[in-house]
Image 1 (cartoon, rainbow, N blue to C red):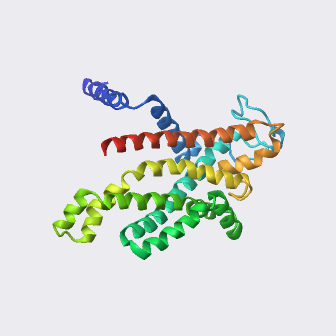
Image 2: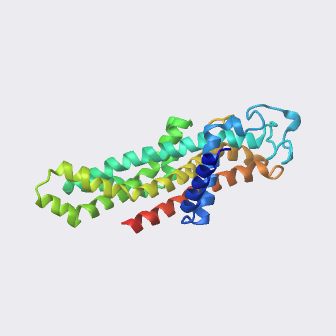
Image 3: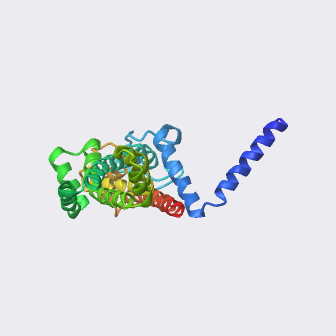
Length: 287
């Protein structure tokens, strides 16, 4: 290895250490966990040890071992490989549902805050009614009407979590509208669309970045709850909630079928929540 390469690697390591020095240990561990799950979602074949859909009845309900790291299910399928395969579906559902809920919330929240008057009252009452309905109940009704699938699960969770985001966006927009720099822009006779685009929206949306991060973990939990009730992705898809639903009938004889997928859901949701809280603290500190 050349001296130039050694110096480059040394500088890179110093830069990484300088960055991580100010990051709490729990956040670092959470980022590593998120990174592992993200890698599993993008390249599952690299991490899998068996075909996640291959049935081998001779190996059914085997406990964790050297051959099957996390055991097998009732059809002899490798649980570790199925969890790795299901990471892509679970993360896609979480990201898709969060993106959908934020899109709906931005439309309602921005329209209510900027319109004011009767429009604000009508939109706020609609959001209040939706917010009063439990998220899981609203999602259950939607999935029951349109049938279980990945798309309906994303839409159901997105609609169910949107009212909470809409209320936060509306409150943030109203707070920004009353600040001194917005009033100064009005005094300087800046066009209202320019004020909204340059001053109100960027400052109102910045704190919501952390909430979106936390929302991904919450969306995965809601989706797993739907799948646990039999209203999620249809078998043999190894989505994490579907694994929980399939394992509940064997929890006495094969505890790993229920505990280990539950730990995967918990680990990812907890990790994104920790990172989201850290981002929230940093953004509030800068503000």
